[in-house]
Amino acid sequence: MGAHVDPIDLVELLRTGRSGPVEFGKNDRQVIRDLIDADDLRADNHFAHNDISSPWCICGDNCEFFFSPDFRLRHIKLIPRMNMGGFGGLMMTWLGGLSLNLGRHPATLAGSQPIEVHSLPRALRFFHKAGLTGPIGGGEERDVSITLSNGSRELELRYELQTVPVSGDTNVVFEIDYFLAAVWIVDNSLVDHEAD
Image 1: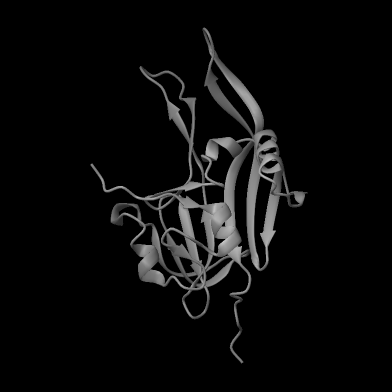
Image 2 (image 1 turned 60 degrees about the vertical axis):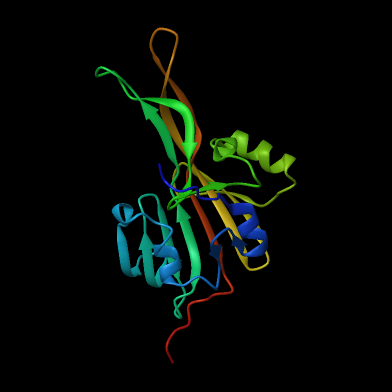
């Protein structure tokens, strides 16, 4: 059985810049490497993409960590995973769970499990009850995002229109909704500086 790991609260990280072992502007690459099991490490190198440019990126199975030019943690991307199951060649169906992890550490939102924000309607209710508000915007295709800000830090949850198979009474049925597709949290005070 693995060692106990504390959850990392994304709302606390938004508000204070720190939660558990994760701290924006302080963590170096080794601290982040230690969060991820060696078997789950997908990348540990320079990274450049249309949307993100980072001198260094460390990617786990369902999480990505980006660094500022002085190799301090600046940006995190999380990909949620819906718990699916099926037996005997049956279609895989959603079992009702959702995991959101930073390596070995499960993520929470204001102390609540990610299932509380798995769909856009539930997320809107959750954030309203928690007193967390931010702009809601449309994406390029069939996606909607919610952005929460605190000073230089931003937490963005992106929802995409999806059809998810679920078990019905006698047959598989499909649930159609805007489901959580990705979570980003960034500290914009740790900007990328171009070389002079």
